[in-house]
Image (cartoon, rainbow, N blue to C red; front, top):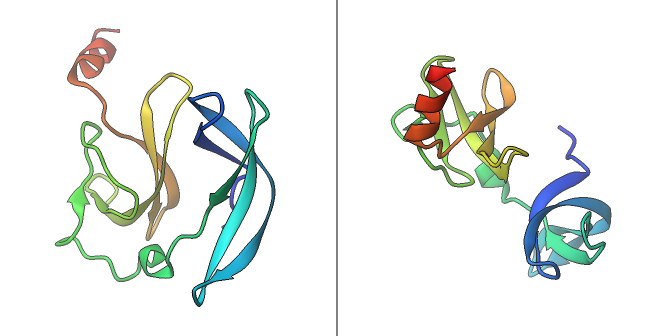
Length: 136
């Protein structure tokens, strides 16, 4: 699956988490392992930063996941990148591949599932936010 041209990342120059655009990069061999280093430009201040986008291949395999080692998904939980997730409503296993914040300020994760492919899910949803949506 192709990577997006944009990421959300903390800009060290303007000290904010901003949308950054990929402007160039290449694969470099460091200590016997390949690493993908990409230049990203901050959309707010136009400062460029070199970011290592490599992910170990062992973390990418989702075929060998089991329900025993996976955390059951709930919108109120917080997940880490690489963590295995079981979504009970979809009856599918997946692995967290990225985390970001939506335009509304809600935290979201991108999960690569075995059956459904990549899906964005909400995480760390507060109990008061759940109550507000029920009243609408």
